[in-house]
Image (cartoon, rainbow, N blue to C red; front, side, top):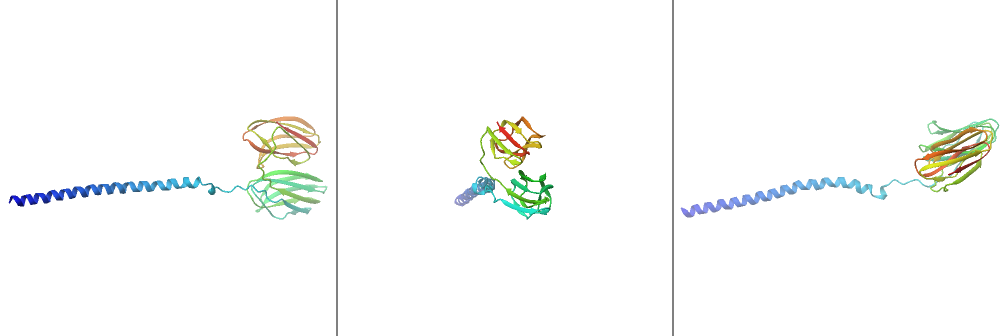
Length: 247
């Protein structure tokens, strides 16, 4: 009888040991299962960071200057359609008539983007504008004589340093010049008899400051606070010789 009790006791102890071992193993497996999702949840968070730091994923910057666009006609006309990129656009116009010449830039839907020129009689001049959105465009021309238009889209990263002197005659878009952040001073002279207007624009053709808008001869200066260093240029409207010293 004593041997039988000892046998049952040994069986019970063995069963208890097996149960303990099973509980320990199950607890370990459960802990591993709980840790696994936490590791997996970090992978999506890291993935976008890796993609953002990949230089090949950045959008290419358009730096190549498109070919100039040549247009011509006589009298009242809608020009051929052409493609413009967003950014700076310089339009040069020649007109040999005696009456009004008005040139408007329209988009593909006929919406006016800018009245580029509004002059009387013979005219030869340039004006720079900003094209906010690229696409198909055309010129709406009102004239009484022969006209021609040359359209350029400069894409430069270079400009002359300051101080510098800019000079010309009539309507011109000047070369680029560099300005640092801070105070810049513009000394302006005009020898003509009609309107003299000078506008400071940034590299993309966006107006920054109107420097002068007067009639007749002028000799004066204008200080301007420059918020961002970079390339700038001037739109000059005049009928005579002019000079601008940038300091």
